[in-house]
Every structure is written in C-alpha cells, then in structure tokens.
Length: 359
Image (cartoon, rainbow, N blue to C red):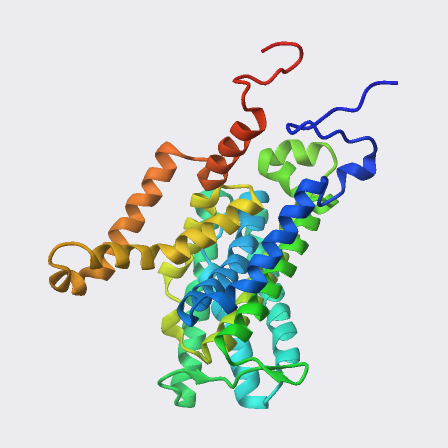
C-alpha cells in the first residue's frame, strides 16, 4: 500500500474524504476561530467610519466573488458587471416603491432578475469569444442604465428611489453596526457557495473550459450548458449584491452605476489574482480601501489645502498606475504575493523543497 502524499505543510491526507474538507488541520481551525472572533469584535472596538469601510468591503466581496466565478474561473469576459448591480438595485427599489414588498421578497426577486439577464446575455458567449464577447456584455450596462434612467425620469424620482431600512427577524437593519453584521453574513454565505461550486462538477467544468474549450468539449463536457450556467450563477449573485447595495445606501440612483464601477470590479479580480477566490477577497479589500489611502496620503503632503480639489484626479491616476504595475510585475496579483510569503514560512529554514527526490 502506497504512503499518503503530504501537501506543502506536511499534513497527510489518508482518504478521499480528506480532500473535501474545507478545514483540514487543527491550526487552520484555530486561525479561523481567531478570525471570526476578530470580525465579531471589530465593530465594538473601532469607530463608525472604520465599521462602514469594513461593510463596504463585505459588499464589494460579493460582487468580486461573482465576477471571479465568471471571468477568473470560467474564462468568460464580462464588462456588464455594473449593469447587473444596477439591475439588482433597481429591482429592489421598484418592488419596494411600487408594491411595498419586504426585504425577504425583493432579494430573491433580484436574484431571479439577475439569472434571467444572465441567460439573455450568456447566449452570445456560445458564439463569441474574447473582445467580441466583452463588447456584447458591455451592451448590458448601457441597456440597464437607459431603462433605469427612464424609470427615474417618468416617475419623477430626480434624486433617486428612497428605500426604507429592511426588517430582519423583527429587527430593523439601520445602524452601521447592524449593516456590518448583515453584510458579513451575506459575504460569508457567498464565499461558502463559491467554494462548494469550485469543488463541484460545475466548477471543474468551468476550469476545463477556461483552460481549453475545444479539449473540454472533446472529453464530454457540455460547454454550452456550463457557459450559460456560469453567466446565470454569476449574474444572480451580482444582482443580489446590487439589491443589498440599494438597501445599504437607502436609495437607488442611476448615477451610482457608471462604467467606472465595472472597471473597479475588473481591477479587483486582476489585482487580487485571477482564478482564486482568495484573490477576489484580497482585491475587494485593496480596491475598496485604495481611495481612502490615497486621500490620507494627499492630506499629509506639503500644500495639502491646495491639493484637496485634485484628490479625485490623484485617485484615478494612482488607480491606473497600480493596475499597470500589477499586470506587468505581479500578474498573479495579491494572492501570488501571499502564496510566496506562506511558502517561505512553510519551508523555513530550508531553502528548497524536495520534489520527486530532487532539491
């Protein structure tokens, strides 16, 4: 009987069930417990400003994870992410404003609308690839923005659609702290769904299609079905993120869903690291906090008062420079940096890891 193979940390897997465990070692369980304790303690230790930033990160993580499934895992390029977020937000806003439907109805409705849009705009992926597919998904953004703008104009909502705070289990989610926990749970559920999708037949099919569509079809994978499924799942998750965004902000306005929002989400998966769920989370943290970091840096520069009006310009310029630097010097993104740091401590004090008897 052959010996079980260890992973990089020396932990031995002795059965197929070990391969499917989300948390393999006692150390991992301990670190997860400490992380959960830190998350629960965070809103009680820091001011509302930092709690709001963390809530924004959780919200961005949902959209980044959904885009990572579609582009980073399944390999289907999409530039309609902002349009999908807008579709979810307007679905929640319209259902609340016109029919006074509760939170428990508007969120599933937004998911269904997102799934329907995913089917509609996933159909071009069956014949189009690369730049042509990207342009076809870009049309989604303009269509949703046009429809949302027409609704606002015809209904006289010049300042946007106002939405009352949702009521969950009889408790009104209004304060920053309440939203922190609500969005943390939503992000955790989204991550759990994505992890299980990656380990399922669908996830393996998406990876095969991304690697080589022709080979995937040759080995019996239903390319058409799984491409559409990727669009449906990703669009549904993104629309839910849009609905949560609408409730979190308390209003929906078409100005919030510019093409720049799509660029931000694309940057999240590029900077975080393509093809990795951890990369999506790291990218969401980085891109969400980046404008505040730039603003803080500008405020300490000489002549900060004169530069105050140029903060937005600095943000755009610095954002573009960072994207270029990651594409050129760190194509694996933040997750690549994390893996090198992790491997360093795993292998320390040895410089080389033995592979197949060689060093």
